[in-house]
Length: 111
Ligand SMILES: [Zn+2]
Image (cartoon, rainbow, N blue to C red):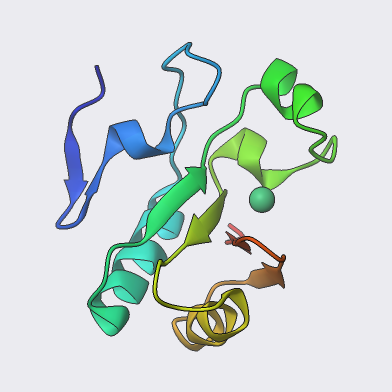
C-alpha cells in the first residue's frame, strides 16, 4: 500500500502515519526539499516520522499544532551524519524550520 514513487528517492509509504493505518498526507514542498537534501548528501534520508493523524500525534507526545498533522514536517535521520551536521545541510536547502534532537532532526516547511 502507498508503494508509489513520488520523487526520485522517495515512495509515499515512507511518509505514512506509523500507527498502521496507512493514512498519509504529504505536502509537495516538504517532498521537494527532502529530495534536494537527498541530492546534496548523496545518501539515503530516512523518514522516522512523516504524517501523523491526530490520535497518533497525541500518543507520541506531538504538539497539538504540529505540522506533522498537515504533512508539512518530517523527523529525519541520515546514518553517517550527526543530527547537528544534518541540520546544517537541511538549513542549506531551505527548510523553513529545523530543530535538532539527540536522535534525529525535525524539518518543516510553511505554505
Ligand atoms: Zn517532528
